[in-house]
View 1 (cartoon, rainbow, N blue to C red):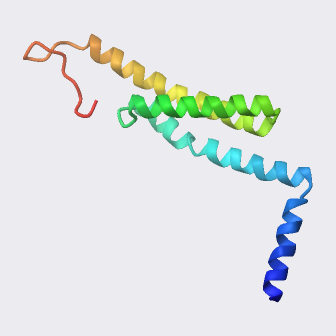
View 2: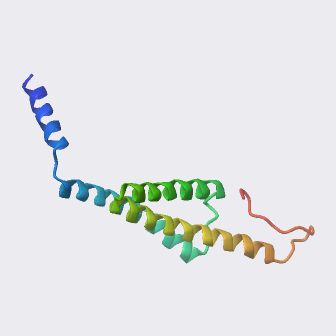
View 3: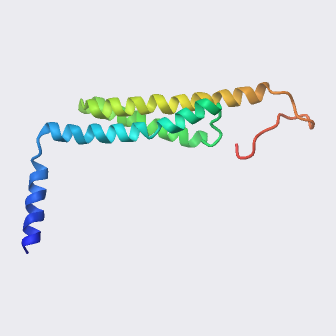
Length: 122
């Protein structure tokens, strides 16, 4: 039972953490989830290809991150606002590359059968 008492005491202390510590946890989480997008954005821009992303995924992700940003604004939470706003910009940059691919395919010369050639899976 001593273990249960220690766990309970630990949980009680967690509930009464100071604001700076809570802010630090949130800021660390925001940095982690935002920076996680950087390798994919760098790869997408360097290869000029976003074929691995579906439009459905990008649309749903943009909607979700936009709503998180709005939630942060309504709650006046700078960590939620900044983290999600930066992530939103990164994801939009991937969508711009994908849109550029679609545009360049439309402008590409026709294939031998008289229809634009399309990549598999798109």
